[in-house]
Image (tube, rainbow, N blue to C red):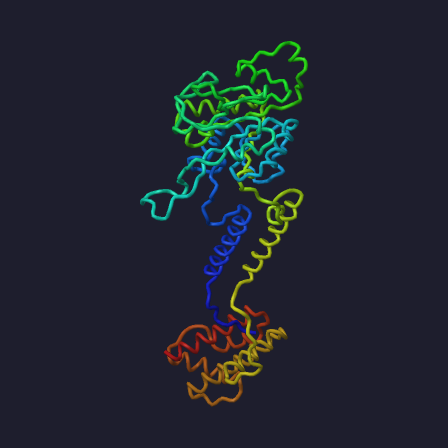
Length: 432
């Protein structure tokens, strides 16, 4: 068997494997993360850097030491005791929002930020230097959608202008002239926390029959002893935010509005050390379970890690065996060199080293005798004549007869090699 010349080096193949493997892993991650290469039409969510997004609030809460996570799984809306922040859009199913709001009354506190803006990406002819996350804002149709949520239908949502806002010991102005507020509160359990200059509700908490002293104190509500005894401490509050510009990136540009947003979120936690969960399913970024995401979650994570480890071992084993492919050699080759190789391979396989010394000594003796015109037929007499002729020519060194005798008696490969080199050196001295 012989090896053909390899057209690729080991480094080139290793680089090809690394680049290809990295691209494949990136492709798998893109599938799991939902990368589509298109700009999202809906930007009012916790991951968005647009004006109506909430990434600024997410980063601010994280810097204050809170554990914040963004979820695309609908099942995470039932996270027990965690603070859930909902940012529904104008296309959100009203009945689904209603179901979540009522389910959360027994599982954990909830903040729902009502939509106000209708956003769209900038056109292709936008000025140079605009970023991909920049959007155009236009008033949405929140009032029509808002009336279809049974729990909120009794409230009246309106837009207009206002001089400013106050609440939670803070006050300030709005980032936009368009202000959205709840103007009528027929529900006696929705208490204002932040209001505008006209007294309309911008953010308030829905008591829902529960006992929430911190929220009641912030709203300036005093309950009678009888009312307090009738409230259930196991029920969780719902905070309704009618004006999203107090919480979104548009509002985070002002320090006072940012402080009010953080204060309201921490007030909803009621002094408990709970996680803050930003829901991405309501705006339309939900992701259903698939085999790829399940493979990296318990209990399938252990099997996935074992598979990856096995692939790594197989790949390393294959790379260590890298080399030119084996090719079938011809059965017979002509030429003296090949005949010598075949004979040497046969002797090596048979391990008959002792058969090499005497023939090689006789071969060298015959060449030297021909070069020195020696006609002796007996091997010993010929070797003695060779020594005499070399001495007559003034060539000093090891005697040929002694070296030939040592080679004939050699049995180990190292001894045979030394003896053959000695005879060859004598022959080279004569050739000079």
